[in-house]
Image (cartoon, rainbow, N blue to C red; front, side, top):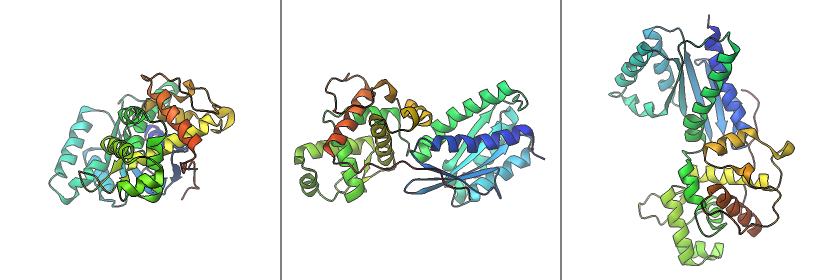
Length: 314
């Protein structure tokens, strides 16, 4: 019989991912629990299955079984292990994961995400439940959702992207590459209406940031990366904010939380702007990014991604 702590932590993991999906950046669908303590499918243009186990009262053999179960599933994008913190558990986990490094499953270790919960956590205490949930939410959002769902997007990426001195251009390029591809400098330059020199410089910036990728280190033929797609999705939701279309009161707390982790404080910028502002603090990545969004929206050259919505449980 699972303990109250075990049930609370398993349910919290699903609640955190379902709540984050209300940002509109991805959709959430709870999956069957068959082999796992919790499982869900996070969807965008792709499907990312997240499955997990919760360790609270297992013995040494239980940790081995949990990790083996998590790593042997081929279709899992992220294997989450929520575990009770103790020296013994950490030591045993290190032993078990180490034993996989010399096996064909060693590459699957990269999908494993471990979140430690204080060993004295008591699910019968409301204050302990609240603090444990918030800590888990912060860690899972940063380490799991940002990496798996948002392609590893970071505050540094956002800041470097926003630093382009050509408002709207980087977004127009990302949108074009996503919808029409990029085969050559000259043809893409004509389609976008940019000079070849400007396009070359902006594409190189996006390539260095990681928003565009290529099979060649020298570039040439580009495609949008997972983090580039995520940046486009985030900017689309920021456009909704400028149009006062985020929902009731033009608020979306889940989007605010994710953007805060990316260094984007969009509520600090007035919504309802009809024209891009030229008066921005060049040291403020949020203001620069919002200027890009407003200008790209005015230019009308972006195929803005629609928000994603929750799906019925499987």
